[in-house]
Image (cartoon, rainbow, N blue to C red; front, top):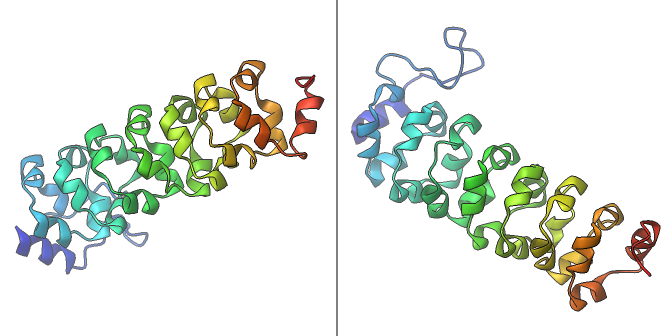
Length: 228
């Protein structure tokens, strides 16, 4: 199997190449290509097989093939390999596979990949992985994804990235989630984000969070007639 993968990697076959007019995209393959392997064969890959996969080959894998990756196999994938998974295939990953991914893998994910994650997959992201998400990745989260974040996940978001959550996302946060926002992150909310907070969300703020509000943020509350 290892030699077979190496032969594929060294071949001139380019899955989904822009210059390839004979195939419609990454999901197709030439005779004998990687996508010809059965799911049972994919599930049997060892560490040498995984390491031999090029990013083009990862991109060529079908959703069914992605779905059979074991958690141990997912943990073996490099950051570049993770970043090569097609967005329409990410949904095939189990929540256990999401848990198995390391922080380097999440750092490598594109904003489009983050947005493509299902709600169940979002909830499965460990706090240590949430903590490394960059501003562009946090900005890519949909309102629905933001709404299902757990209190521990919200608390783990890098304060510098909290400002990337859109106003709709802020409004979608449960009161418990708002109460879990790091005080340092509260101080970095934009005036628009602060003005979006509902009365219920504001009531959920702790004394420490309220004290973290800056002189720039307070007028946003006054404008909204939420501050006595």
